[in-house]
Every structure is written in C-alpha cells, then in structure tokens.
Length: 225
Image (cartoon, rainbow, N blue to C red; front, side, top):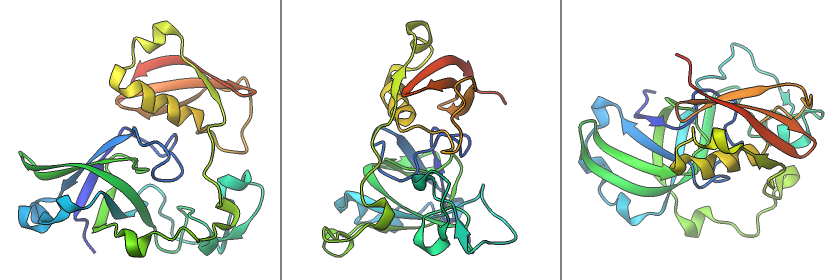
C-alpha cells in the first residue's frame, strides 16, 4: 500500500497526543494528499458528510516483533490485556483508525485539495492509507458495550499557565493546549512531582510539572530543530 496523504497536526512527537480521537475537538489538522492523489474529483460528494474515518500508519511505533499482550494506559499500565482487546499502537500491523470531524474542504491550494479536520489523534506527518466517510446509520451503535474503556476519560488535572508564559502561546492555540494538558499526557506509571515533562506542540516546546492534581506549565520555548 502507498500513502494517499499525510496529516499536519500540532504534535511533533507521540508524547502529548490525546489517546483517542475526538477527546479534544479544538485540535485542528489538515490532510494534504500526495501528488498522485491530488485529484479534486476524488472528493466529489465528501462535502455531504460531517465525519470521516482515517486509516493510517503508526509510523513512529513500528517494530520487527509483536507481543500478544500489551499494557493499556487506561488501566494504569499495570495490567496486561490481549493486543486485539486494545487500541495499542504496538500491533502485528501498525494500522491506526480514527474518526474525525470534517470542518472544511479547500479545493484549490498550491498543494491541491486539502481537508481540514478536528479532533485528530495523529502525530504531524503521519501517513494516511485511506479515508472513508462516517455513515451514522451503520457506524453508530448506541447500545455498544465498551469493555474496560466504557466511559470517556475525564480531564484529570487542573492546568496552571503563568500569565508571562501564556503570552508566548498564540491565543487560538491556548484552549486546545489546556485541554490536552488536563487529560494528563504523562505515561500512567510516572508520577514524580519533581520531573519536568515536555512535548512539542504547534511549534513550541511545552514543559510542565505535575504535583497531585495540579499541572503547572514551567516554560514555553520555541521548538528545537
């Protein structure tokens, strides 16, 4: 298979990305097609759909071997479950599936047609294998049972960003960043109050500490590299 597109998001690495699509609707992304697929006719009729399925590659989580069990972050990383009972990126085939909201179709850009979407849980540059419309009458199952992930994760942390650091964050990025931080992007097995964590977001390096339920942003720097 060849990628049909790549996605542009705010995340330069895996760390910090919400663990499911749609958890932070304020996150904006763009899907840019590879040259072979920059064909406007391929999008004909897409404007009638509100949501899309993205089938993509875990390009930063590929391994030569696989394990039949994994440690889901949702369970604190302390319990092993079968890989096929989870959405772990460490799979026999590194394939991801995400439902995102289609916010706009830009039919004529220097890069051909571009799709704008909200709520994506993909790293910047992730290759996309295919795009399919979300069809409510068949894709929505209100009676479905969600196993160990039956409830959506709640915002766990109170986020504090000092005023001087807020000034370094573009206004249009602040709400999305605060919601990403409130979901607690740390690995579930790490709880060192002295540790400074950091991740790339929207061209910035966000550094923070967590004490109890309070996350404090301690620095906002231009992204390195």
